[in-house]
Length: 321
Image: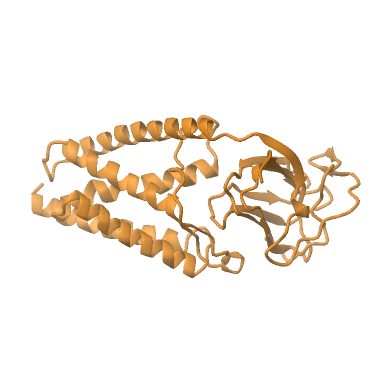
Protein backbone atom coordinates (compact mmCIF):
# COMPACT_ATOMS: atom_id res chain seq x y z
CA UNK A 1 0.00 0.00 0.00
CA UNK A 2 1.54 3.37 -1.00
CA UNK A 3 2.01 6.10 1.56
CA UNK A 4 -0.05 8.51 -0.52
CA UNK A 5 -3.00 6.14 -0.74
CA UNK A 6 -2.77 5.28 2.97
CA UNK A 7 -2.69 8.97 3.90
CA UNK A 8 -5.74 9.69 1.75
CA UNK A 9 -7.65 6.70 3.14
CA UNK A 10 -6.79 7.73 6.71
CA UNK A 11 -7.98 11.29 6.04
CA UNK A 12 -11.29 10.05 4.63
CA UNK A 13 -11.83 7.71 7.57
CA UNK A 14 -11.19 10.56 10.04
CA UNK A 15 -13.67 12.81 8.19
CA UNK A 16 -16.38 10.15 8.52
CA UNK A 17 -15.41 9.52 12.14
CA UNK A 18 -15.65 13.23 12.95
CA UNK A 19 -19.11 13.42 11.37
CA UNK A 20 -20.25 10.54 13.59
CA UNK A 21 -18.75 12.22 16.65
CA UNK A 22 -20.58 15.49 15.87
CA UNK A 23 -23.82 13.57 15.49
CA UNK A 24 -23.51 12.08 18.97
CA UNK A 25 -22.41 15.41 20.45
CA UNK A 26 -25.47 17.28 19.17
CA UNK A 27 -28.13 14.82 18.05
CA UNK A 28 -27.44 11.41 19.64
CA UNK A 29 -29.03 10.10 22.84
CA UNK A 30 -32.32 11.83 21.95
CA UNK A 31 -30.83 15.28 22.69
CA UNK A 32 -33.25 17.22 20.47
CA UNK A 33 -36.36 15.71 22.09
CA UNK A 34 -34.92 16.36 25.55
CA UNK A 35 -33.97 19.97 24.90
CA UNK A 36 -36.96 21.29 26.88
CA UNK A 37 -35.56 19.52 29.96
CA UNK A 38 -32.00 20.70 29.31
CA UNK A 39 -30.23 22.87 31.86
CA UNK A 40 -27.24 25.07 31.16
CA UNK A 41 -24.96 23.17 33.50
CA UNK A 42 -21.31 24.11 33.57
CA UNK A 43 -18.13 23.44 35.50
CA UNK A 44 -15.21 25.80 34.98
CA UNK A 45 -12.98 24.57 37.82
CA UNK A 46 -11.14 21.29 37.20
CA UNK A 47 -11.22 18.97 40.20
CA UNK A 48 -10.50 15.50 38.78
CA UNK A 49 -10.27 13.39 35.64
CA UNK A 50 -13.28 11.04 35.91
CA UNK A 51 -11.56 7.86 34.76
CA UNK A 52 -11.41 4.62 36.73
CA UNK A 53 -11.10 0.87 36.44
CA UNK A 54 -14.58 -0.77 36.44
CA UNK A 55 -13.95 -2.58 39.73
CA UNK A 56 -17.54 -2.05 40.82
CA UNK A 57 -18.99 -3.37 37.57
CA UNK A 58 -19.87 -1.75 34.27
CA UNK A 59 -22.27 1.17 34.70
CA UNK A 60 -23.49 3.90 32.37
CA UNK A 61 -21.53 6.45 34.41
CA UNK A 62 -18.29 4.48 33.92
CA UNK A 63 -18.98 3.93 30.22
CA UNK A 64 -19.75 7.63 29.67
CA UNK A 65 -16.43 8.71 31.20
CA UNK A 66 -14.46 5.99 29.40
CA UNK A 67 -16.05 7.01 26.08
CA UNK A 68 -15.01 10.62 26.71
CA UNK A 69 -11.43 9.31 26.81
CA UNK A 70 -11.44 6.51 24.23
CA UNK A 71 -13.45 8.35 21.54
CA UNK A 72 -10.63 10.87 21.14
CA UNK A 73 -7.77 8.37 20.89
CA UNK A 74 -8.08 8.17 17.05
CA UNK A 75 -7.36 11.88 16.68
CA UNK A 76 -4.03 11.52 18.44
CA UNK A 77 -3.29 8.27 16.59
CA UNK A 78 -4.09 9.31 13.04
CA UNK A 79 -4.10 13.09 12.59
CA UNK A 80 -0.27 13.20 12.83
CA UNK A 81 -0.19 10.64 10.01
CA UNK A 82 -2.01 12.98 7.59
CA UNK A 83 -0.81 16.40 8.77
CA UNK A 84 2.58 17.68 9.87
CA UNK A 85 1.96 19.36 13.21
CA UNK A 86 3.95 19.58 16.43
CA UNK A 87 2.50 18.00 19.54
CA UNK A 88 1.97 21.20 21.57
CA UNK A 89 0.45 23.01 18.60
CA UNK A 90 -1.82 20.04 17.94
CA UNK A 91 -2.90 19.86 21.59
CA UNK A 92 -3.55 23.61 21.77
CA UNK A 93 -5.61 23.58 18.58
CA UNK A 94 -7.60 20.59 19.78
CA UNK A 95 -8.26 22.30 23.14
CA UNK A 96 -9.69 25.35 21.35
CA UNK A 97 -11.91 23.26 19.06
CA UNK A 98 -13.34 21.00 21.78
CA UNK A 99 -13.94 24.05 24.03
CA UNK A 100 -15.96 25.68 21.24
CA UNK A 101 -17.98 22.47 20.74
CA UNK A 102 -18.68 22.22 24.49
CA UNK A 103 -19.73 25.87 24.58
CA UNK A 104 -22.17 25.27 21.72
CA UNK A 105 -23.61 22.29 23.60
CA UNK A 106 -24.14 24.50 26.65
CA UNK A 107 -25.62 27.41 24.65
CA UNK A 108 -28.12 25.17 22.85
CA UNK A 109 -29.03 23.17 25.99
CA UNK A 110 -27.95 20.00 24.19
CA UNK A 111 -25.37 19.29 26.87
CA UNK A 112 -23.22 20.95 29.49
CA UNK A 113 -19.82 22.64 29.58
CA UNK A 114 -17.50 20.66 31.84
CA UNK A 115 -13.79 21.38 32.04
CA UNK A 116 -13.26 17.87 33.45
CA UNK A 117 -14.70 16.40 30.23
CA UNK A 118 -12.34 18.56 28.17
CA UNK A 119 -9.34 17.38 30.19
CA UNK A 120 -10.47 13.78 29.67
CA UNK A 121 -10.72 14.40 25.91
CA UNK A 122 -7.24 15.94 25.88
CA UNK A 123 -5.85 12.96 27.77
CA UNK A 124 -7.30 10.63 25.13
CA UNK A 125 -5.70 12.67 22.33
CA UNK A 126 -2.37 12.68 24.16
CA UNK A 127 -2.35 8.92 24.68
CA UNK A 128 -3.21 8.36 21.01
CA UNK A 129 -0.42 10.70 19.92
CA UNK A 130 2.13 8.96 22.13
CA UNK A 131 1.00 5.56 20.80
CA UNK A 132 1.73 6.44 17.15
CA UNK A 133 4.97 8.14 18.22
CA UNK A 134 6.06 5.03 20.11
CA UNK A 135 5.77 2.74 17.07
CA UNK A 136 8.49 3.00 14.39
CA UNK A 137 6.99 4.91 11.46
CA UNK A 138 6.02 2.65 8.58
CA UNK A 139 3.00 4.51 7.25
CA UNK A 140 0.84 2.50 4.91
CA UNK A 141 1.34 -0.94 6.39
CA UNK A 142 -1.29 -2.93 8.25
CA UNK A 143 1.41 -4.13 10.62
CA UNK A 144 2.14 -0.54 11.59
CA UNK A 145 -1.55 0.20 12.22
CA UNK A 146 -1.88 -2.97 14.28
CA UNK A 147 1.08 -1.94 16.43
CA UNK A 148 -0.40 1.55 16.89
CA UNK A 149 -3.69 0.06 18.11
CA UNK A 150 -1.83 -2.30 20.45
CA UNK A 151 0.32 0.53 21.81
CA UNK A 152 -2.79 2.68 22.27
CA UNK A 153 -4.57 -0.09 24.20
CA UNK A 154 -1.54 -0.65 26.46
CA UNK A 155 -1.02 3.06 27.13
CA UNK A 156 -4.76 3.55 27.72
CA UNK A 157 -4.89 0.79 30.32
CA UNK A 158 -1.77 2.17 32.02
CA UNK A 159 -3.14 5.72 31.99
CA UNK A 160 -6.53 4.74 33.41
CA UNK A 161 -4.82 2.66 36.11
CA UNK A 162 -2.64 5.62 37.13
CA UNK A 163 -5.60 8.05 37.11
CA UNK A 164 -7.64 5.56 39.14
CA UNK A 165 -4.87 5.36 41.73
CA UNK A 166 -4.40 9.13 41.90
CA UNK A 167 -8.15 9.70 42.29
CA UNK A 168 -8.28 7.07 45.05
CA UNK A 169 -5.53 8.70 47.09
CA UNK A 170 -6.87 12.22 46.52
CA UNK A 171 -10.34 11.08 47.60
CA UNK A 172 -8.87 9.39 50.66
CA UNK A 173 -6.88 12.49 51.58
CA UNK A 174 -9.88 14.79 51.13
CA UNK A 175 -12.55 12.47 52.55
CA UNK A 176 -15.22 14.02 54.74
CA UNK A 177 -17.25 12.70 57.64
CA UNK A 178 -20.92 12.03 56.99
CA UNK A 179 -23.50 13.90 59.03
CA UNK A 180 -27.29 13.71 59.25
CA UNK A 181 -29.59 12.49 56.50
CA UNK A 182 -32.27 14.71 54.94
CA UNK A 183 -34.96 14.09 52.34
CA UNK A 184 -34.46 15.83 49.01
CA UNK A 185 -38.06 17.07 49.14
CA UNK A 186 -37.16 19.71 51.78
CA UNK A 187 -34.42 21.30 49.66
CA UNK A 188 -34.93 24.58 47.76
CA UNK A 189 -35.68 24.26 44.05
CA UNK A 190 -34.69 26.40 41.05
CA UNK A 191 -38.03 25.97 39.30
CA UNK A 192 -41.53 24.75 40.14
CA UNK A 193 -41.33 22.02 42.81
CA UNK A 194 -42.44 18.41 42.43
CA UNK A 195 -45.39 17.06 44.44
CA UNK A 196 -44.48 14.81 47.38
CA UNK A 197 -47.09 12.79 49.31
CA UNK A 198 -47.52 13.61 53.00
CA UNK A 199 -48.83 10.10 53.76
CA UNK A 200 -47.14 7.12 52.21
CA UNK A 201 -49.13 3.93 52.58
CA UNK A 202 -47.99 0.62 51.09
CA UNK A 203 -47.75 -0.38 47.43
CA UNK A 204 -46.09 -3.21 45.53
CA UNK A 205 -43.31 -3.23 42.94
CA UNK A 206 -42.50 -6.58 41.35
CA UNK A 207 -44.79 -8.25 43.92
CA UNK A 208 -42.66 -6.81 46.73
CA UNK A 209 -44.40 -4.60 49.33
CA UNK A 210 -42.95 -1.10 49.62
CA UNK A 211 -43.50 1.27 52.54
CA UNK A 212 -41.56 4.56 52.15
CA UNK A 213 -40.01 6.02 55.29
CA UNK A 214 -38.83 9.51 54.29
CA UNK A 215 -40.57 10.76 51.13
CA UNK A 216 -42.63 9.59 48.15
CA UNK A 217 -42.82 11.20 44.70
CA UNK A 218 -46.55 11.70 44.22
CA UNK A 219 -48.54 9.92 41.54
CA UNK A 220 -50.20 13.28 40.90
CA UNK A 221 -47.04 14.61 39.28
CA UNK A 222 -47.29 15.08 35.51
CA UNK A 223 -46.13 12.15 33.41
CA UNK A 224 -43.21 14.23 32.11
CA UNK A 225 -41.44 16.89 34.13
CA UNK A 226 -38.06 18.04 35.38
CA UNK A 227 -37.13 19.59 38.73
CA UNK A 228 -33.78 20.94 39.96
CA UNK A 229 -32.79 20.89 43.65
CA UNK A 230 -30.07 23.17 45.06
CA UNK A 231 -27.29 21.38 46.99
CA UNK A 232 -24.52 24.02 47.14
CA UNK A 233 -21.89 21.35 47.82
CA UNK A 234 -23.24 20.59 51.31
CA UNK A 235 -23.74 16.84 50.89
CA UNK A 236 -21.68 13.66 50.61
CA UNK A 237 -24.02 11.13 48.97
CA UNK A 238 -27.42 10.95 47.33
CA UNK A 239 -29.41 7.72 47.37
CA UNK A 240 -32.92 6.42 46.89
CA UNK A 241 -35.29 3.93 45.30
CA UNK A 242 -37.49 3.92 42.23
CA UNK A 243 -39.80 1.55 40.43
CA UNK A 244 -43.11 1.09 38.62
CA UNK A 245 -46.00 0.03 40.90
CA UNK A 246 -47.68 -3.26 40.00
CA UNK A 247 -51.00 -1.54 39.36
CA UNK A 248 -49.49 0.27 36.35
CA UNK A 249 -50.20 -2.21 33.58
CA UNK A 250 -48.70 -0.46 30.59
CA UNK A 251 -46.44 2.39 29.54
CA UNK A 252 -42.74 3.05 29.89
CA UNK A 253 -40.98 5.66 32.00
CA UNK A 254 -37.47 7.07 31.94
CA UNK A 255 -35.74 8.62 34.94
CA UNK A 256 -32.64 10.77 34.41
CA UNK A 257 -30.71 12.09 37.40
CA UNK A 258 -28.10 14.65 36.32
CA UNK A 259 -25.47 16.28 38.51
CA UNK A 260 -24.86 19.96 37.77
CA UNK A 261 -26.76 19.67 34.51
CA UNK A 262 -24.45 17.05 33.02
CA UNK A 263 -26.04 14.21 31.05
CA UNK A 264 -23.48 11.75 32.44
CA UNK A 265 -24.07 12.39 36.09
CA UNK A 266 -25.80 9.07 36.71
CA UNK A 267 -27.42 6.15 35.02
CA UNK A 268 -30.28 6.77 32.64
CA UNK A 269 -32.85 4.36 34.07
CA UNK A 270 -35.70 3.05 31.93
CA UNK A 271 -38.70 1.30 33.43
CA UNK A 272 -41.31 -0.80 31.66
CA UNK A 273 -44.70 -0.60 33.30
CA UNK A 274 -45.60 -4.28 33.05
CA UNK A 275 -46.29 -5.01 36.70
CA UNK A 276 -43.07 -7.01 37.02
CA UNK A 277 -40.43 -4.26 37.30
CA UNK A 278 -37.83 -4.63 40.02
CA UNK A 279 -37.11 -2.07 42.72
CA UNK A 280 -34.10 0.01 41.68
CA UNK A 281 -31.69 1.35 44.32
CA UNK A 282 -29.08 3.98 43.50
CA UNK A 283 -26.37 5.83 45.40
CA UNK A 284 -23.87 8.39 44.13
CA UNK A 285 -21.21 10.77 45.45
CA UNK A 286 -22.37 14.39 45.34
CA UNK A 287 -19.49 16.19 47.03
CA UNK A 288 -18.95 19.58 45.31
CA UNK A 289 -22.22 19.15 43.40
CA UNK A 290 -24.20 22.41 43.24
CA UNK A 291 -27.51 21.01 42.01
CA UNK A 292 -29.34 17.83 41.07
CA UNK A 293 -31.86 17.68 38.24
CA UNK A 294 -34.39 14.85 38.30
CA UNK A 295 -36.24 14.27 35.06
CA UNK A 296 -39.16 11.83 34.90
CA UNK A 297 -40.65 11.19 31.49
CA UNK A 298 -43.53 8.91 30.45
CA UNK A 299 -43.06 7.29 27.06
CA UNK A 300 -46.84 6.95 26.62
CA UNK A 301 -49.63 9.53 26.77
CA UNK A 302 -50.64 8.86 30.38
CA UNK A 303 -51.16 12.21 32.09
CA UNK A 304 -49.67 11.22 35.45
CA UNK A 305 -46.36 9.57 36.21
CA UNK A 306 -45.89 5.82 35.76
CA UNK A 307 -42.81 5.59 37.96
CA UNK A 308 -42.49 6.35 41.68
CA UNK A 309 -39.41 7.51 43.58
CA UNK A 310 -39.14 7.16 47.33
CA UNK A 311 -36.72 7.64 50.23
CA UNK A 312 -34.56 10.02 48.19
CA UNK A 313 -31.99 10.93 50.84
CA UNK A 314 -29.00 13.28 50.97
CA UNK A 315 -26.28 12.80 53.59
CA UNK A 316 -24.82 16.06 54.83
CA UNK A 317 -21.13 16.82 55.24
CA UNK A 318 -20.63 16.82 59.01
CA UNK A 319 -19.83 20.16 60.71
CA UNK A 320 -19.93 22.05 57.42
CA UNK A 321 -20.31 25.77 58.05
